[in-house]
Image 1 (cartoon, rainbow, N blue to C red):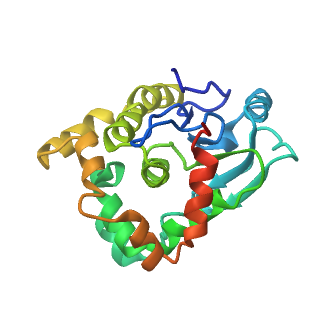
Image 2: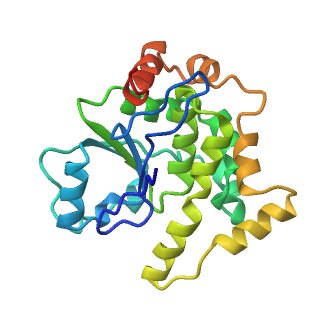
Length: 240
């Protein structure tokens, strides 16, 4: 099933439903959407978002990335702002934002280990959202949205190869986004950097959770309530 959502103003938007679960069943369509910056939506784009059932938006961007909406945000939408980066921690970011590694999953594990509380806060915002679908976004829908997607799908029980396959879908959509903005495609440069590290984007994503009990880490180091994990699964997993 094609999970791409064509919301006018955005390029890298897709539903996280219809993915198989390791124990059988699948994720529920309409429950969770990952995207690039929703502030770029046109009025038609916001209407499509509402028609899809989304009622909560979780904005993962830093304060200095947020700007005015291109079209009025509908009053039915609740927006939750949780800047995932923790960009004020310069000791961390002076290492990770100074090269192409920032555009790859190579920094996900170090981020998850250093900032478990902020990762847990994002998941808490999704788990405790009101009725309706939830859309979370960063700027391009690749790095921060990719990290959050990895976390929620892992907790829901989606197998790693399926999560990696979803991550790789970003390449075509971002190519279109760069072209629309008149910017060069970063894909080849990032792939070359990963190759120099002896890996690929999919392999690097799967390596993030290698040997890590994600639920226990987010509970013990991040303070994520087990009830929030249960709520995440209830929101995302399709009922039999």
